[in-house]
Length: 167
Image (tube, rainbow, N blue to C red; front, side):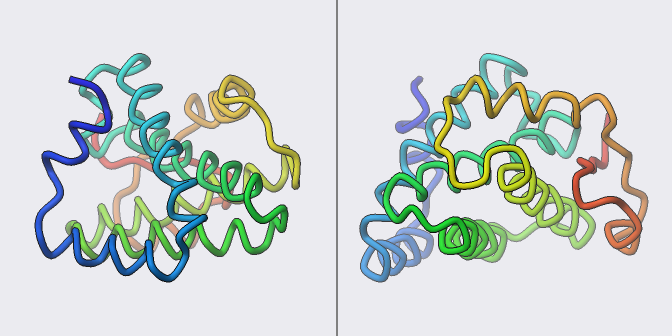
């Protein structure tokens, strides 16, 4: 099943209302987020199979990748890196709110989301780049990912380090 259909199957009514709110507040940015989301899931499905849906290194990679793709696509619309990063943060923070996790998994996801946004800024700035360049920039962080034991650890790790819970 392709990524857009997978996404639509798991969205519930409450989530759909929240998504509609994002669309009406930021229609162009919201539309730029759809291909970023589909591309992220597609890349991770090819690279990791279904394992990226667990709290592991593949999941950490997916969260960072999604944020990088969101920033890149938003830059195509607004060309302001701070607006693009703020949009990606707003959307992914909201995503963590509407699909709640355990506290530790939430801390991990928020950290990895931030890592993706910061890595995009550091590596590419305002420049829109191809998916392959983004993936290649992110892969070295996957090798050095650290296992998270408690939510306080997110404060003690470098911002450009992926965190995960399970192997």
